[in-house]
Length: 452
Image (cartoon, rainbow, N blue to C red; front, top):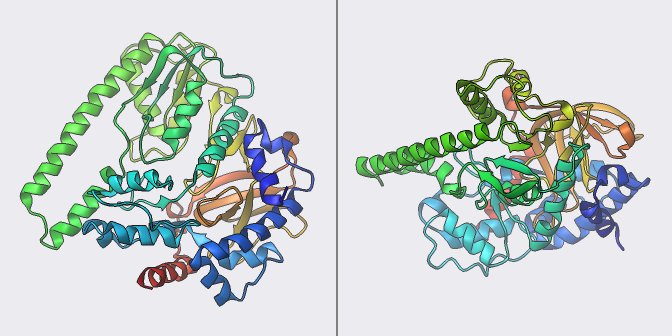
């Protein structure tokens, strides 16, 4: 068994964070070398970058840094491709970042980006989209192998964060995630919560699928309006459609909250982002439910930000006090769409363990210098980057927009992998975000690949 296969096998181990091998660093280094040798033959953009940086092989993690892709590279497609319905060109763009040929994706009959995603899936390219809050979604390719390993990897992280409780099909489950959509969490959420729900007690906020075009359409309409390609009537029709969706969602939310209120003294498992949880607190208080008036074994799974919701400064404290959840019943994780699996919350320490197939690479803010401790032990602060050994559909090296503190070699509570102690997004900090040098370079390679 080669190093790659040995490490990705941990994705199907119940606790990969404590089961990691003693020679993890050496095994990861060998796996990185294997992936680089294989991927540069498959991804022309990576091969060009390697040639221009003079990287023929990976001797150390420092050699990997100039080969990392920025998280923004996965939204580097020209928006005109989507505006003009040039789906063959979207195939070409996707192919520039993928390990397997995308030319066979049949785009006949594709009318919008969600149709294109469906066409990709039909051809075995199981791409998913980021939430697209900026108006432009990232699209990341994954294979069936990615799906087969990523889902159990995520479940292992979920379970580690609630160590005193096991899935037993005995709870009323409430999740804001539908069972279909372009976000990868739809598949993970269904797999996770199905294990906890009693018969007939799996309650989704909505069954409407998450569509990439829902978040991308407003920005597209602004572009088309500026170009004179749409008029007031089309804008008004879109606004009416959004208003109807919002009205429907408001009704669904009220019905969902009513069901929680009816069952609030049963064992519940509620999965929602912080902003939605705050909406629940306000609505349930209005229904007469007081702080702590819930079953003592209620579990809450949360994460993400508030997504623009108006919340008080102490919203997290109020939410946990209202639902009466202690740390061992508050499931959370650290992850991003570019990452296979999650960094699991280690209770009760409020830190996150990286999985053994993920190599943390802590960089300076510019993303050009590796700060990892030379001896493999110690705490460093910097920009989060990583090499995802598990990734099969794309190159595993990614630079994120997060500022983190990571400790190497702590072996906290038997965890053998590095742990993430704090996380902030650069764009939310006073120092702000800087444009990554690598992002422009890789984007230029991608444009050249499409042109060629």
